[in-house]
Image (cartoon, rainbow, N blue to C red):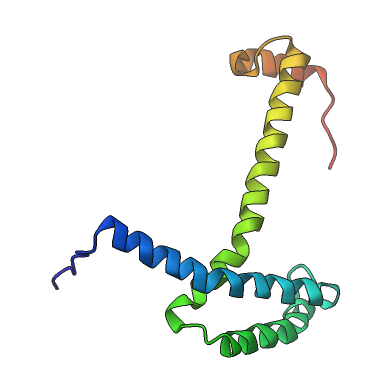
Length: 133
């Protein structure tokens, strides 16, 4: 099977990308608004109730896809854009917490956490009783 070569220029690919963003981002924001509107009725977690509670929201989103005439090829991208802000928030919050944790370790050990050795960690762990979960 021959591979199909993309003969478009960088400018043409960028133009197509910008057009796709312009087409999909507004729909993605409307999907987020639908989820936010229905959030109180959505059961979080893994359960049969979760599946049932999400059906009405899914129906509304599919109706939106019809009303906005979403292209079949764009359906997954629209949903990817919905998740994007949450992924970015997760990254930023996790990075901030990791930096705080690293700083706290440095303060606790009175040295840069990167310079800690397994011997030092082992000594500290042997001093503390086991945590019961």
